[in-house]
Image (cartoon, rainbow, N blue to C red):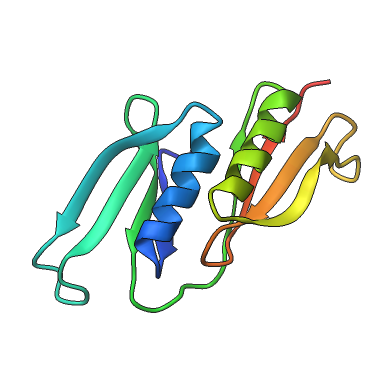
Length: 129
């Protein structure tokens, strides 16, 4: 259903580093980036898109913080959840829930949560047994 989504960053370099580390652990990298020189709200606004072949998750520079969001990235294994969590912390994130089962959601739910530099709750999740 979702083609792509965006998150917003008041400290673009720190947020980009965070996602390069966290999403790199899941096999994603920056596949598109641009600067919007003629943006009237923020001239020189920086944008980067993460994906495997095309951008599906965008980070957009803003001057004012946006309401915190929650985004979850799907993985195919619990080891990937743990790798995401470690890489996200290494990349400047704040722990918001160590890798582990979350049976409140369903019996095979295994996730980890970190806060990005703007306080967004970012998760990696595996739904397999």
